Image 1 (cartoon, helix red, strand yellow):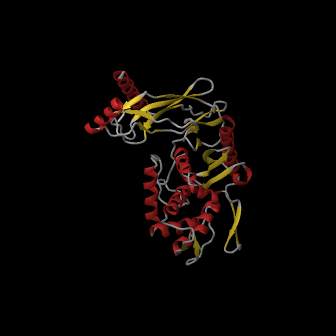
Image 2 (spheres, rainbow, N blue to C red):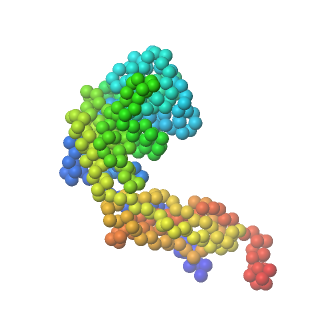
Image 3 (cartoon, one colour):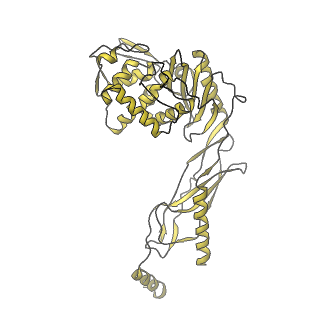
Length: 385
């Protein structure tokens, strides 16, 4: 019996190691199946990072002001880490105040809170505020740009490089792609704080003297829009990373190089509409709690279990109520190491298609009994001691 259990355990571990998380993956649509006018575009689901549609997704292009997605990401990360506070005061330098394009006309020496600066960047794409924040955080814009590029490397954005924090200037060395923009957008909206700013339609600063109106018209036009950032320069044309959430599912639609702002908006809305109309999130973990697994010759009689890997899969609508099949051995022999793969959860769609195999792992260490422990266990078993 013990040999049989051991064989089952070894088989399950090997399967777990080689299959890891085998999750259902959608094949991205092409432009033949979904007509988008922009020369480069991506539709991504936030929770899974699944790409649903792509068109020249890895083509390097001038990103214009969607550059500020990375600028805002660094600001928000510093806020959440405690390095920065929304009530901190930022003083505009002569250089920051000199920036044109989209701006709020900061004057040299003018002071605003981080809250106001972030609002201006998110709502009206204020170049002067972006530079002021970069200087406040790193001393110089160039030092801040180094942080931007480092963060891009951490996110594995292989086709992105920044030379400034605004995207105002057309520079061959300053580029990104629709795919990379989608990844950094996904990272930004994982911080709920930013949506307090990117969902503002109209507001004001300087005690109501200077009005702000969001450059992203989808905030006012598209149901569930959560942001995110527009951009335009002569080289970049019209760019947009649009995010929207409905019924607990959120999509990122990126379009780059559109001919005009209306085409940019209609393309992004079409991508979002397609996502919401055709897909749903399927939970890959049963709502039933995992049982403890019996441990042979261990200092504990059972080991707690937990899931590894993905929590959700993106599936075509109509497959969001899956069947869960738990596969575990009857017991495992000590020692057991935390993180050790002990079984799997097979998840099948309503039509019987396999969606995923989610590894089940030990959630604690269980040491092997020593001599005296074994002796005590035998005593309890034989004599009821």
